[in-house]
Image (cartoon, rainbow, N blue to C red; front, side, top):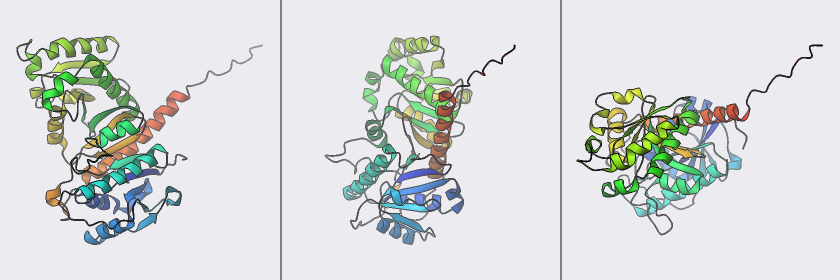
Length: 350
């Protein structure tokens, strides 16, 4: 696939009983979006016609059966199935979950084959997607298997970036998962992403402690002293600007986070609660560390408001914009590092 100024954005439809369809329609109703990207929705023409009618959208779809039929300047819909789908907004349904996975699998295949530049995933229900063929907690784990690299959940806005040492891990198991190797790997992933994906030459990274008050010298757990501190010291000695561990309870309230390019939390809620409190509806979930770009909104299926036409599309729109920006930054970084300035030939001074 030739890289074009107009980025091809693949979109997995997500849970059809949730708000995914609505926020996708709202995002691409503005025709100006088509000036800098070509959306490709992996679903079916019947489903999208139903959603268009239900939400009274004015979008005109270009229905295709394969990517060779792609049309720039239009909202493309790849027919991924011919089944009749019964959409019941707000209802959890394993059959609907199966369609969500079908969409994700075909969109991921197109991403791997370079038929799309980036992938933006609409929200899924982590329970109804489970089957004998699909046993992943969510998008991130599935894409980590399908794509190359070391994946990391990276929640981002223009001013705040939060990565995780552990993501979908029960709280009781967090400390056993955090090893020196894991810490080094995750920090390395964040560091490289900040340089390649966000054009930050000398990233400053803060790391939050594992235990309350970072263990209080062993009074509230020894993991910070035994694992985290010595590993961070080793990483800092290598030249990376990595600081911590910081006590998580006061780090965001004191605005200390503003002094860093990224923050790495030890576990899911330690990082995502402050992130979503500060930026809910504007944040983006970015899977850093992989050889392809994938983003998603910072919210779930929102069954309670599905089908009502009141869903906020800002986070999904930001996910599209972020995917495009990161892709372009990566291309720029690759060109810069692949083509170093050549020495000019010496002039003959005779």
